[in-house]
Image 1 (cartoon, rainbow, N blue to C red):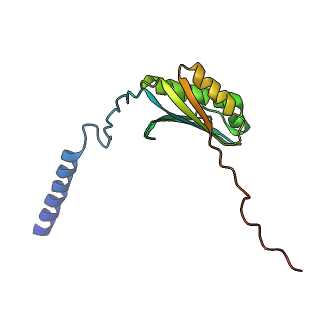
Image 2 (image 1 turned 90 degrees about the vertical axis):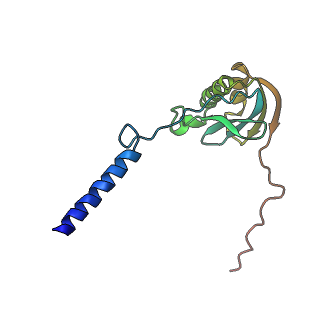
Image 3 (image 1 turned 135 degrees about the vertical axis):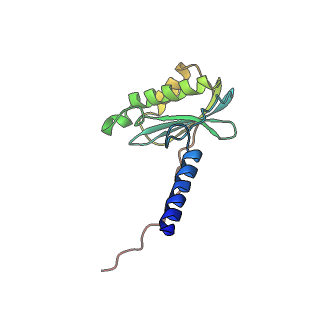
Length: 152
């Protein structure tokens, strides 16, 4: 009988400890809202592949401020790699960047996709001053070594 009482009291103690450490809403995680970054100049990286376009806005140190992609804006399948999808993604990223105080950007474009030009135009139209554009697409210089010749 005494064993049952001690087990019951231990269980109650566990329940009390759990309820005291929980947040006011049972099991809800309290999130702290992030403030605005307030940076005036930064970099924009446009990665335009054959399947999608991703636009990332960073400060001058390379810390990401905001980003957007064609897939994240609701485009699916073959519509993700269109210039219009890239324009919508770039407009969204630029709007978020302007909310964080960004005015001047340097643009680094990478990849062979269709959304390269339209993403650049959308950034300029959204109120960002583009001071510098560079193509950073990796280019193989003589490429990988081919496999050895087949002997039959």
